[in-house]
Image (cartoon, rainbow, N blue to C red; front, top):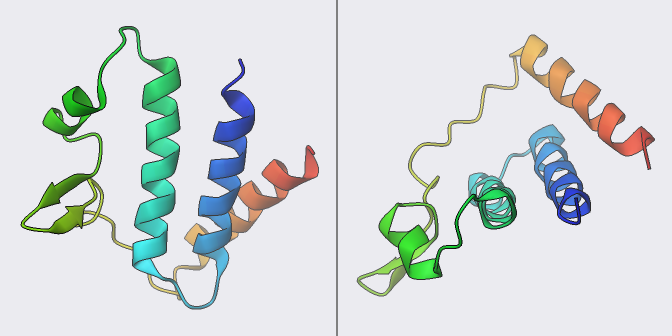
Length: 100
């Protein structure tokens, strides 16, 4: 239960980035990675080392001097004209921030 405030904060950060007029995909990837790391670290059934997470593709890796994040090449932000998606993002943001 101690991880829930961290999950809440990371999820709010992610939703706020999605709701910005200009989306920075690298910031979205970082926010998604941070959320995933909290979830995996605190909700895993077995204790794992960071090296094990990297082997499973669940943590950032350093390849040829560059840091590669697991979600880096798979995140696709919907177009701004996707009214339904962004309506749901704003709704989620309202839910998450009104419960404080």
